[in-house]
Length: 77
Image (cartoon, rainbow, N blue to C red):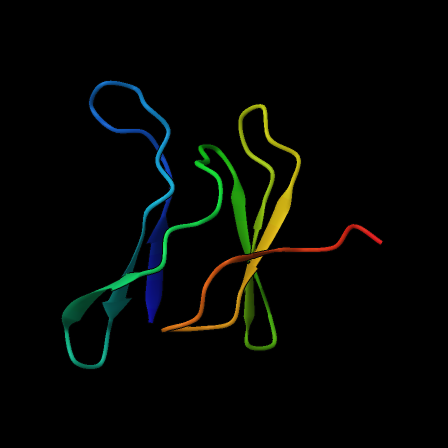
């Protein structure tokens, strides 16, 4: 599975959309949108959880636990 998330559209607006590329079946899917639009951020995999870290003018961390699950704000504690 490959994840394509956030970025900017042709008008320069920040995006919070998330798309999935299922490599084995060569098909596309859509995941829940991230809570906040992000550009120039990092995606990190920890076990089965995906973290979206920071971005332009953004310091929050969101977590996603897989297809069909919503994004949640990660605790900073």
